[in-house]
Image (cartoon, rainbow, N blue to C red; front, side):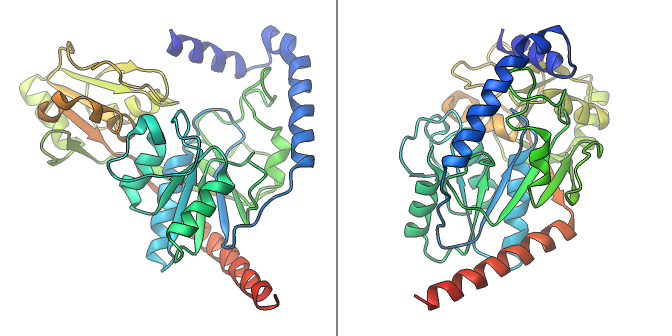
Length: 348
């Protein structure tokens, strides 16, 4: 039911139809309240440069893969990044460190995915300033913080804002509830850079924009840890006549399904609600020889001990690469911010 509702809403938000026009007065109220909150908020500096990776479109645009890629790139350049997140749909109300064995029901699935992919110090808290302060207290050698989401969390001072625009673009260009945007399109004129992720350059802003390329190459067997290329699995399926299913509880599951099919795999797609909690084992009665799931879904599957031996399940990691010039741009900004912060501290 939730999947159908999400599909219906996004279909309405793709155009300026009757429903959107009827909701436009409510959007004006939403916009006014959001603007008022922003004006009254005083940003807090936490002592190190902060990079916010966010969006203005409600729901998934690929922020987390971009965050992971940025953390990896900065580590390769000698930085020691830490990550903070709200921990969406997690139960943490105060700062909690995300560890490799953390419960996604507590810390959220995306922060756990980031931790597993980068091994960077990661903290979650609804109040991101508190998350950042807790992280720096526990890891004082961290010299840059990446905030996964939080473009609208104005209480945290940021030195770099990256707005990710995903496959759905900007919808009809209106803010909630008449449209899918948290803020108007003009907000993109204020950010430092726009990251185009799986979308064409449809943004009319003059802000610098860069492309993030994403794709799938390999799959990891959930039970054995064996890494197998998708092309090999495709040939195996064709040769042995194997039945395959693809399940995804992400914002745009169609992209996951189409990428698998691009590798020659014939899969029966099953779209689950975004952030599906896997409280029930969805694979138990699944008649398939091969089951493909996303990394984001895999972190939720750990609650089912019986899945550890299910060799039908393959986790397909999304590989995202950032434009080198984007990383250069970010590094230049945070280097300048770090220098300025150091000079200010010396004057105290």
